Amino acid sequence: MNTTGEKKGAFLRGAGILCHISSLPGKYGIGSLGKEAYNFVDFLERSKIKYWQILPLVQTGYGDSPYQSVCCNSGNPYFIDLPTLCDMGLLTEEELAAAEMPAGKVNYGELYSRRYATLRLAYGRFNIEDKAFKQFVKSGLFDDYALFMSLKSIYGGTYRDWPRAYKYKEELAISELRENLYKKEYCFWQFLQYEFLREWKALKKYANGKGIELVGDIPLYVADDSSDVWAHPELFLLDEDLNPTEVAGVPPDYFSATGQLWGNPLYDWAANEEQNFAWWTDRIRRSCELYDIVRIDHFRGFDRFYAIPEGAPTAEVGEWRKGPGIKLFRAAESALGNVKIIAEDLGIIDEGVVALRDATGFPGMKIMMFAFDGNAKNEYLPQYIEENTVTYTGTHDNDTAYGFILGMSEERFMQFKKLLRSALKYEGISYPVVSRAEAARALVKCALGTKSDMCIVPIQDILGLDNSARMNVPSTSSGNWQFRLEEVPGRRVAAWVRAAVKSSARE
Image (cartoon, rainbow, N blue to C red):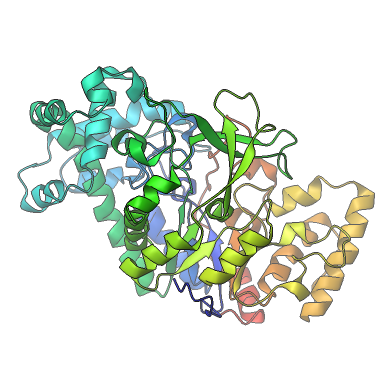
């Protein structure tokens, strides 16, 4: 982080792959931090990839989205590797076998009904008197989370449905709750975070040892029903009953004709500033401990944010308001020094957002799929992309490259091919663009060939998959976040990627 705006070339020139942990293969219904994750790192190393980008690692809540978590600093218990727990003596071979689930897309309903029962079996054999674990609990890092989840286990619903003393987090009631539930519930949730972090740190060390940096994600907003809002209601725009007065989203745009109604509570930025943005600084600090590079989602919300009246059916009615701007990042820089951040500056971008991004020196994002609309001045065309940027073929919110091209009419595809060939020629790349499959591969080559210091390609585009492999469709509430690999890509795929990386001077 460098708020002088003088930073140029924030990252070493290199290529990255976007693949969330949930998308890794395995026997237990969802990707984990176990063997397949290490095999994926080996694939990245063989492919000469320098960056592995993932989505937020957080425990997912309603809707299964990693952008709606019960705790913004949590780790997803689903990612805890069950064979590792078996090796530790916390699960039996029979229990491990019983936890197997069919291959294919993530079935979150079945996972929710089965996985926590398995994790409770492991916790039942875990020694909570272990010195390292006791120090972890004493640190208080996950005190609010463990209390929140303990109350969830007892009362269900949202925190607004709980008895008043718990709803408003009254000190005496909370202290008694912690003591009464210490072994049964409180330490169970602490154990999940302890084991997740232990496994994550080991995986990160392995990846870093092979020259691969981890790129993680901070969503701008937190979930309405979360330990973050429950523990710090003064930092959000809530009424006396702790209900949001207005909620987050964006107006009608490329993704949706009625806008995107996210429903997250909005920050009380004045209250955050009174505390010198301490909560945000801590959030960035903890993210920097998890990742080598942090991507801040919806960066534009720090300049101006869109406020939608609570209860509105869509995001069509709302207003833009001023965000904290550079003050937040200066406060974080004062406490943390220079950290590596990517600004997700997509969507409705105006001069204020550009000025804030330039003032921080953070690289912004370029999306190759958006480049070929026939506008000769399109900012996503290779000739307009500068070094201090990160180019993607598309993000987790877009079509896959192949799906995007399959959706074109024949006339549109002919135009697209002509424009893509022109871009490749500008970059000095010779690659056949005849079929739609070839065009999807050429789009990857074009992204890699840009001047951007970093280029990230979703694993779906590396494999040439269609939209059945898409990760998320914005403004839809079901069928998302389910994509999984059938297997870790093999040597043939690695060889293709390695050659593409080498030809784009990203080794």
